[in-house]
Image (cartoon, rainbow, N blue to C red; front, side, top):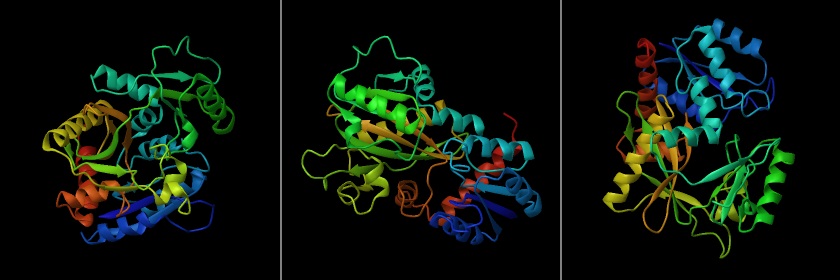
Amino acid sequence: MNVTILTYLEKEGVETYDPVVEQVAAALKTHKHKVSILGVHGDPIKLIDGLRKQKPGLVFNLCEMFGRDALLDVAVAGALSLVGVRYTGGGPGEFYLQQDKALTKELLAYHDVPFPPYVVFRRDTFPDTTTHLRMPLIVKPLRMDASIGIEGKSLVRSTTQMMKRVIAIHEKVKDSALVEEYIEGREFYVGVIGNKKPVALPPIEMDFSGLPAGYPRVLGRRAKWVPSSREYKGTRSKLAEIPDDLRAKLQSVSIDAYRALRVRDYGRIDLRVNENDEVYVIEVNASCYLEKSAEFATAAQAAGISYPDLVNAIARLALARSRRKY
């Protein structure tokens, strides 16, 4: 069928794409789909007109922001729904739940999925108390992703440090601040694929062993996006080498979180495990990054799923879901 890959442009009129776009396009073509690419920056008219012109049977949605607003993936999914096209991944509701980490935790609590204790410092109101939280704490923006607003100083060990980070997030990121207990231990990512019967992929572990002594074991903005930094050079993801019981626990909790947040087609669950092998969900990522070397595709490869098969499985899941009414 005709498949349109929808992606984000850094600048209007500059057709430069993230490498994942060409990778997904090549994977779809192995299954004989006719593939086109629609890149948009912040023009809703261009988005709608482009869809009408290309008339896709399916939109493979890789658009993570709109204009310069990282929160407008909600609006993009809403526009796709309004136009009536079938598309992969989260809808506007799923993306909104993913963005608001406090709402995420409320849903996880309802479904008895474990997560670290937390409070929210909103920009207009502060919580009544934080005395139930145990140091150290990690302070992050409530709604941003891609480690925006997270750095070494986000890990705090005093009330004074905590308030400095809260104020920095309020003033610099223009977001509420989420303050939660920092889980000392190991960090894992578990990819999940499916709708009616989601399947957890092999866990990936973040290896912090390359960081200098005393550096916070936190995957912040520099570790993700600044190749010249010590944080970037000192961290790497790897297939987790863990006992079967811990692997089963990570996968079980991840599927529970995936279902609790109503994730569609595919996603990734970020988790921390303490010294007692207690598992905590840190974040739920609907429509996670699909680049070939990223954690989700790496885990699929470990499960015996080639990259072309993975991409086309996501497309089939979206098509099957669009035929059902639920």
